[in-house]
Image (cartoon, rainbow, N blue to C red; front, side, top):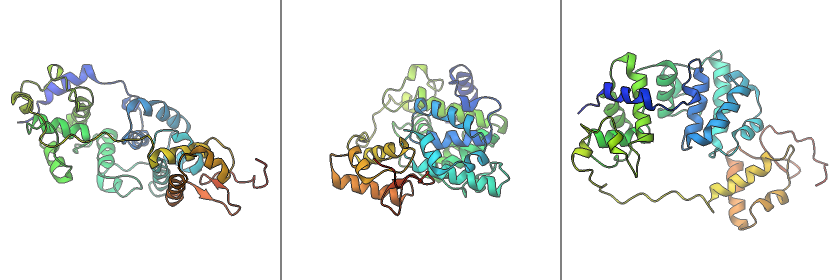
Length: 299
Protein backbone atom coordinates (compact mmCIF):
# COMPACT_ATOMS: atom_id res chain seq x y z
CA UNK A 1 0.00 0.00 0.00
CA UNK A 2 1.08 3.58 -0.62
CA UNK A 3 -0.28 6.60 1.16
CA UNK A 4 -2.34 8.71 -1.24
CA UNK A 5 -0.52 12.04 -1.38
CA UNK A 6 -3.60 13.86 -2.65
CA UNK A 7 -5.73 12.71 0.27
CA UNK A 8 -3.09 13.52 2.86
CA UNK A 9 -2.20 16.92 1.41
CA UNK A 10 -5.86 17.85 1.01
CA UNK A 11 -6.37 17.11 4.71
CA UNK A 12 -3.24 19.07 5.62
CA UNK A 13 -4.47 22.13 3.72
CA UNK A 14 -7.23 22.55 6.28
CA UNK A 15 -5.72 20.87 9.38
CA UNK A 16 -2.20 22.32 9.39
CA UNK A 17 -1.33 24.07 12.63
CA UNK A 18 -0.25 27.71 12.38
CA UNK A 19 3.27 27.24 13.71
CA UNK A 20 5.64 30.20 13.35
CA UNK A 21 8.61 28.18 12.07
CA UNK A 22 6.44 27.14 9.10
CA UNK A 23 5.79 30.74 8.05
CA UNK A 24 7.07 32.14 4.77
CA UNK A 25 10.39 33.90 5.23
CA UNK A 26 11.58 31.91 8.24
CA UNK A 27 15.27 31.22 7.73
CA UNK A 28 16.94 27.80 7.69
CA UNK A 29 18.73 28.74 10.93
CA UNK A 30 15.43 29.53 12.65
CA UNK A 31 13.98 26.23 11.43
CA UNK A 32 17.07 24.47 12.77
CA UNK A 33 16.51 26.16 16.15
CA UNK A 34 12.93 24.88 16.20
CA UNK A 35 14.09 21.33 15.51
CA UNK A 36 16.57 21.45 18.39
CA UNK A 37 13.85 22.70 20.72
CA UNK A 38 11.15 20.27 19.61
CA UNK A 39 13.17 17.17 20.47
CA UNK A 40 11.15 15.37 23.17
CA UNK A 41 9.35 18.63 23.98
CA UNK A 42 5.70 19.60 23.28
CA UNK A 43 5.00 22.35 20.77
CA UNK A 44 3.16 24.49 23.34
CA UNK A 45 6.28 24.74 25.51
CA UNK A 46 8.52 25.53 22.55
CA UNK A 47 6.43 28.34 21.02
CA UNK A 48 7.26 31.22 23.42
CA UNK A 49 10.91 30.20 23.84
CA UNK A 50 11.47 29.91 20.08
CA UNK A 51 9.78 33.25 19.39
CA UNK A 52 11.94 35.10 21.91
CA UNK A 53 15.08 33.24 20.80
CA UNK A 54 14.89 34.09 17.09
CA UNK A 55 13.98 37.69 17.84
CA UNK A 56 17.07 37.99 20.04
CA UNK A 57 19.44 35.82 17.99
CA UNK A 58 18.11 35.61 14.41
CA UNK A 59 21.30 34.20 12.87
CA UNK A 60 24.00 31.67 13.75
CA UNK A 61 26.54 34.46 14.29
CA UNK A 62 24.22 36.28 16.68
CA UNK A 63 23.79 33.10 18.69
CA UNK A 64 27.51 32.37 18.57
CA UNK A 65 28.25 35.82 20.01
CA UNK A 66 26.12 35.08 23.07
CA UNK A 67 27.71 33.48 26.12
CA UNK A 68 26.79 29.90 26.99
CA UNK A 69 25.26 31.31 30.18
CA UNK A 70 22.96 33.58 28.14
CA UNK A 71 21.94 30.64 25.98
CA UNK A 72 21.17 28.42 28.98
CA UNK A 73 19.08 31.18 30.54
CA UNK A 74 17.14 31.72 27.32
CA UNK A 75 16.53 27.97 27.06
CA UNK A 76 14.54 28.25 30.28
CA UNK A 77 12.59 25.15 31.27
CA UNK A 78 12.53 23.37 27.90
CA UNK A 79 14.44 20.52 29.49
CA UNK A 80 17.46 18.53 28.30
CA UNK A 81 19.70 21.64 28.54
CA UNK A 82 22.56 19.90 26.78
CA UNK A 83 20.57 20.70 23.64
CA UNK A 84 21.08 24.41 24.34
CA UNK A 85 24.82 23.94 24.76
CA UNK A 86 25.03 21.94 21.54
CA UNK A 87 22.91 24.51 19.69
CA UNK A 88 25.36 27.21 20.74
CA UNK A 89 28.27 25.04 19.55
CA UNK A 90 26.41 24.46 16.28
CA UNK A 91 25.96 28.22 15.83
CA UNK A 92 29.68 28.81 16.40
CA UNK A 93 30.57 26.20 13.76
CA UNK A 94 28.13 27.54 11.15
CA UNK A 95 29.22 31.15 11.71
CA UNK A 96 32.90 30.24 11.54
CA UNK A 97 33.05 27.51 8.90
CA UNK A 98 30.00 28.11 6.67
CA UNK A 99 29.85 31.91 6.38
CA UNK A 100 26.77 32.04 8.63
CA UNK A 101 24.74 29.86 6.24
CA UNK A 102 23.15 26.59 7.39
CA UNK A 103 24.27 23.76 5.05
CA UNK A 104 21.55 22.26 2.87
CA UNK A 105 22.70 18.63 2.52
CA UNK A 106 22.15 15.85 5.03
CA UNK A 107 25.73 14.61 5.11
CA UNK A 108 27.18 18.02 6.01
CA UNK A 109 24.44 18.76 8.51
CA UNK A 110 25.15 15.49 10.32
CA UNK A 111 28.71 16.66 10.97
CA UNK A 112 27.55 19.71 12.94
CA UNK A 113 27.42 19.67 16.76
CA UNK A 114 24.15 18.38 18.16
CA UNK A 115 22.69 17.34 14.80
CA UNK A 116 21.79 13.71 14.28
CA UNK A 117 20.07 11.82 11.52
CA UNK A 118 16.56 13.11 12.19
CA UNK A 119 17.48 16.79 12.62
CA UNK A 120 19.70 16.76 9.53
CA UNK A 121 16.89 15.42 7.38
CA UNK A 122 14.30 17.73 8.93
CA UNK A 123 16.40 20.80 8.15
CA UNK A 124 17.19 19.64 4.60
CA UNK A 125 13.50 18.92 4.03
CA UNK A 126 11.70 21.78 5.76
CA UNK A 127 14.28 24.54 5.25
CA UNK A 128 15.51 23.62 1.76
CA UNK A 129 12.62 21.50 0.40
CA UNK A 130 14.86 18.51 -0.27
CA UNK A 131 12.93 15.27 -0.99
CA UNK A 132 14.51 13.28 1.83
CA UNK A 133 12.62 11.01 4.25
CA UNK A 134 12.02 12.58 7.66
CA UNK A 135 11.09 10.06 10.35
CA UNK A 136 10.05 10.90 13.90
CA UNK A 137 7.94 8.92 16.37
CA UNK A 138 4.70 10.20 14.86
CA UNK A 139 5.71 9.25 11.32
CA UNK A 140 6.84 5.79 12.40
CA UNK A 141 3.45 5.19 14.04
CA UNK A 142 1.48 6.31 10.96
CA UNK A 143 3.56 4.08 8.70
CA UNK A 144 3.26 1.12 11.09
CA UNK A 145 -0.52 1.38 11.03
CA UNK A 146 -1.37 2.54 7.53
CA UNK A 147 1.27 0.54 5.65
CA UNK A 148 2.12 -2.44 7.87
CA UNK A 149 -1.14 -2.95 9.76
CA UNK A 150 0.46 -2.83 13.20
CA UNK A 151 -0.72 -0.81 16.20
CA UNK A 152 2.79 0.33 17.07
CA UNK A 153 6.04 0.67 15.19
CA UNK A 154 8.78 -1.85 15.72
CA UNK A 155 12.03 -0.74 17.31
CA UNK A 156 13.72 2.12 15.44
CA UNK A 157 15.86 1.20 12.45
CA UNK A 158 17.14 4.12 10.42
CA UNK A 159 17.68 2.05 7.28
CA UNK A 160 14.23 0.44 7.40
CA UNK A 161 12.38 3.58 8.53
CA UNK A 162 13.96 5.80 5.89
CA UNK A 163 13.21 3.22 3.18
CA UNK A 164 9.57 2.98 4.31
CA UNK A 165 9.04 6.74 4.13
CA UNK A 166 11.10 7.24 0.98
CA UNK A 167 8.76 4.78 -0.78
CA UNK A 168 5.79 6.97 0.15
CA UNK A 169 7.19 10.33 -0.98
CA UNK A 170 5.45 11.87 -3.99
CA UNK A 171 7.19 14.02 -6.61
CA UNK A 172 9.99 16.30 -5.41
CA UNK A 173 7.82 19.42 -5.61
CA UNK A 174 5.41 18.02 -3.00
CA UNK A 175 7.75 15.87 -0.93
CA UNK A 176 8.53 18.41 1.81
CA UNK A 177 4.91 19.33 2.39
CA UNK A 178 3.95 15.65 2.31
CA UNK A 179 6.52 14.96 5.04
CA UNK A 180 5.11 17.76 7.18
CA UNK A 181 1.60 16.42 6.64
CA UNK A 182 2.59 12.87 7.60
CA UNK A 183 4.13 14.18 10.80
CA UNK A 184 1.07 16.32 11.54
CA UNK A 185 -1.25 13.37 11.03
CA UNK A 186 0.61 11.39 13.66
CA UNK A 187 0.60 14.32 16.08
CA UNK A 188 -3.08 15.25 15.73
CA UNK A 189 -5.06 12.22 14.48
CA UNK A 190 -3.09 8.96 14.46
CA UNK A 191 -2.07 9.39 18.07
CA UNK A 192 -0.58 6.68 20.25
CA UNK A 193 -3.44 6.02 22.66
CA UNK A 194 -6.62 7.56 21.23
CA UNK A 195 -6.40 7.67 17.42
CA UNK A 196 -9.25 9.48 15.72
CA UNK A 197 -9.65 7.08 12.83
CA UNK A 198 -12.96 8.57 11.66
CA UNK A 199 -11.14 11.85 10.97
CA UNK A 200 -8.17 10.28 9.22
CA UNK A 201 -7.68 10.98 5.49
CA UNK A 202 -6.08 7.53 5.14
CA UNK A 203 -8.91 5.61 6.79
CA UNK A 204 -10.25 3.93 3.63
CA UNK A 205 -6.95 2.17 2.93
CA UNK A 206 -5.28 1.95 6.35
CA UNK A 207 -4.28 -1.68 6.86
CA UNK A 208 -4.50 -1.43 10.63
CA UNK A 209 -8.06 -0.10 10.51
CA UNK A 210 -9.10 -2.62 7.86
CA UNK A 211 -7.74 -5.38 10.11
CA UNK A 212 -10.00 -4.24 12.93
CA UNK A 213 -7.43 -2.09 14.76
CA UNK A 214 -5.68 -4.96 16.58
CA UNK A 215 -3.89 -4.19 19.81
CA UNK A 216 -0.14 -3.98 20.02
CA UNK A 217 1.64 -7.30 20.47
CA UNK A 218 4.08 -6.36 23.21
CA UNK A 219 3.58 -4.81 26.64
CA UNK A 220 2.70 -1.13 26.82
CA UNK A 221 5.72 1.06 27.43
CA UNK A 222 5.59 2.68 30.85
CA UNK A 223 5.23 6.44 30.93
CA UNK A 224 8.46 8.22 31.66
CA UNK A 225 8.63 9.51 35.22
CA UNK A 226 10.04 12.95 35.96
CA UNK A 227 9.23 13.73 39.61
CA UNK A 228 12.07 12.73 41.88
CA UNK A 229 14.47 11.79 39.08
CA UNK A 230 17.98 13.11 38.57
CA UNK A 231 16.58 15.11 35.65
CA UNK A 232 14.36 17.04 38.05
CA UNK A 233 17.26 17.65 40.43
CA UNK A 234 19.47 18.88 37.58
CA UNK A 235 16.69 21.25 36.58
CA UNK A 236 16.36 22.61 40.12
CA UNK A 237 20.10 23.25 40.35
CA UNK A 238 20.17 24.97 36.98
CA UNK A 239 17.22 27.13 38.04
CA UNK A 240 19.32 28.52 40.90
CA UNK A 241 22.15 29.41 38.54
CA UNK A 242 19.86 30.88 35.88
CA UNK A 243 18.11 33.03 38.46
CA UNK A 244 21.35 34.54 39.77
CA UNK A 245 23.38 37.09 37.86
CA UNK A 246 26.61 35.95 39.49
CA UNK A 247 28.08 32.71 40.79
CA UNK A 248 26.48 30.91 43.74
CA UNK A 249 27.70 28.98 46.76
CA UNK A 250 27.23 25.30 47.45
CA UNK A 251 24.78 26.30 50.20
CA UNK A 252 22.64 28.06 47.58
CA UNK A 253 22.48 24.84 45.61
CA UNK A 254 21.80 22.71 48.67
CA UNK A 255 18.54 24.59 49.25
CA UNK A 256 17.33 23.67 45.76
CA UNK A 257 17.12 19.94 46.63
CA UNK A 258 17.37 19.26 50.36
CA UNK A 259 15.56 15.93 50.02
CA UNK A 260 18.52 13.73 49.15
CA UNK A 261 22.12 14.91 49.48
CA UNK A 262 23.56 11.95 47.57
CA UNK A 263 21.22 12.51 44.64
CA UNK A 264 21.91 16.24 44.67
CA UNK A 265 25.66 15.69 44.54
CA UNK A 266 25.24 13.14 41.76
CA UNK A 267 23.14 15.56 39.72
CA UNK A 268 25.63 18.39 40.29
CA UNK A 269 28.52 16.15 39.23
CA UNK A 270 26.69 15.27 36.01
CA UNK A 271 26.09 18.97 35.26
CA UNK A 272 29.79 19.65 35.76
CA UNK A 273 30.69 16.69 33.50
CA UNK A 274 28.33 17.98 30.80
CA UNK A 275 29.88 21.46 30.90
CA UNK A 276 26.58 23.02 31.91
CA UNK A 277 28.00 24.20 35.25
CA UNK A 278 31.52 25.25 36.20
CA UNK A 279 33.13 25.31 39.63
CA UNK A 280 35.33 28.33 40.24
CA UNK A 281 38.63 28.47 42.10
CA UNK A 282 36.91 29.88 45.21
CA UNK A 283 34.49 26.94 45.30
CA UNK A 284 31.48 28.78 43.91
CA UNK A 285 29.45 27.54 40.94
CA UNK A 286 28.43 29.34 37.76
CA UNK A 287 27.00 28.82 34.33
CA UNK A 288 29.70 28.62 31.64
CA UNK A 289 30.63 32.13 30.54
CA UNK A 290 28.71 33.72 33.41
CA UNK A 291 29.98 36.93 35.06
CA UNK A 292 32.12 35.85 38.03
CA UNK A 293 33.34 39.23 39.35
CA UNK A 294 31.65 38.79 42.67
CA UNK A 295 33.88 36.40 44.60
CA UNK A 296 33.89 38.72 47.60
CA UNK A 297 30.19 39.46 47.50
CA UNK A 298 28.29 38.68 50.67
CA UNK A 299 25.45 36.23 50.66
